[in-house]
Structure formats: C-alpha cells, structure tokens
Image 1 (tube, rainbow, N blue to C red):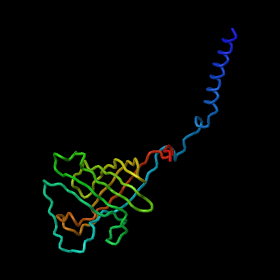
Image 2: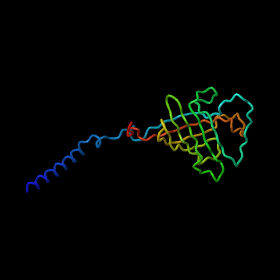
Image 3: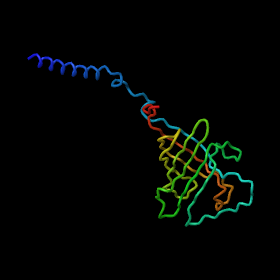
Image 4: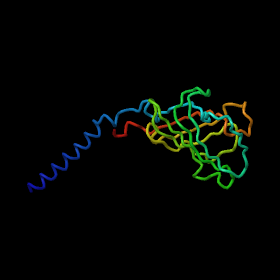
Length: 186
C-alpha cells in the first residue's frame, strides 16, 4: 500500500509542477509587441555599372533573341563612375522563351564593406525585358543569411543607345526580410 501512496503523490506533484510552470511562465503571458510580430526589413538602393577599363575601343553589343546574357559588373552606392564600389554583380540569364523559367537565371550580388559582407541570390525567372523588372531575392550568405524579399531593377541612364547593353547602368532597390535573428545561436 505504501508504494501506491508514494506513486500517486509523485504523479500528483509532477502534474502540479507542470500546471504551475504553465501558469507562472513569463513567456506564455508575454504579449507580442509591434516590433516582434514581423521579421526585420532592410532597404538598400544600389547601382550596377560596367567596370571602367582604360581602353575606349569597346564596341556596342547588339542584343539578339538567341543568346545568353553573362555579365560581371560593379555594385556601387551611386550612379556616378566615381561612386564607392560596395561589391560585384554577376549573373547568367537566358532570355529565350524556352529557358524563361530556368533555375540558371540567377543574379548574384556580392557585398564587401564594413557594414555588409556576404551575397544575395536574385531569381530572374520572369524577365519581361521592360525598363523596370521586379525580381525575387531567394537567399543569401554572410550578413544576408536566409534573406528573402524583392529586387527592383530599373535602367538608370537613358542616354545610352538601347542596343548598348554593356554600358547601361541599372538602379537596384532591394527590400529584404530576415528570419527572427533572436533564435539564431551565435
């Protein structure tokens, strides 16, 4: 009989402990503040430019319908040639209808500054060849780990000829969302 009494007392005390912990826990009664309801957002405004080369014998490249667009550009803070370089923009886009939804159509934005060090991957599946394109940010590394969001690409200078693909400057507006970083273990 004594073992049954000890067993019932132990079970009752365990149930009481669980109930008290649930009622007195500070996390269960904490109301979410406005800052904690949504993940943090980051807005960046940058420019993609052709790297400056000493030779001025570059010929304009005419765009055809059956080619891949492979590029390596500078990522700068402003539209001027003298703006501070903050990283690189590299990508591979096949603008042909059969490859429009290809996983290869990715633009990589790499950052190397005091504020940001890492990269972003921008998916270019729905490129419509307009002056303004809204693309999806699908991930990142370093300062941009697990980033999601939108990237708006717009041609910044309209002084160039439309066939001069290599010399165009593009304005990139990034709206990035990050997961709750408080749950990440340092």
